[in-house]
Length: 246
Image (cartoon, rainbow, N blue to C red; front, side, top):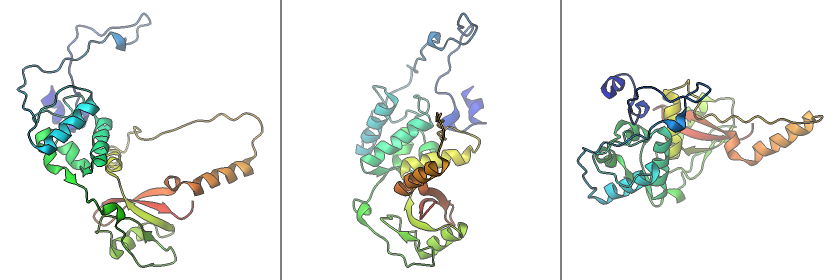
């Protein structure tokens, strides 16, 4: 069953466990009783191989924390242990906090710990203080602040600006690892709404539209994240661009 699914689905979409039931438990109303479903059991016949290198130990510790399990070996499969795209983001974030980086494509393409560890990179300790000076290119006055990726030069910046010619860009930053995971997952599955947050507010009484728009505009002006879009360069590498105004 797992082999059949792997021929049609990426690893992170394959169920972590398969439980065979004579019939599904139902509530008195005839709906699925999720609380009555049996807890999946992990494979017990698999040979455990403990981590040896420093990076293997760091990654196994993070897996254990994210997956909430007591033991992880170097031959274990992230998604087979209960991992999913959300937990993959958590792994990426925890690595980043410890000074390491793992590209999303490698996280999903190499879910076995022994393979995954080869693609974990140590972040430059000085990257956060590096600044790339880029000349003002036109009236849009696009600038770079604290960009660690040296590939974003004047030429690349110009190409990015050409994709949004009528928009004034204030700053451009690389995506954080967990943002890259979300972006790659969302672009590979454009029909999913897993990463879209929607909130509905019910207002009572008469609404002053003019005042409401004024207050909302102040909120957008105050927070850069509300003026941020994702743009790609010539190599399809995503960047987050903070717009001057919205």
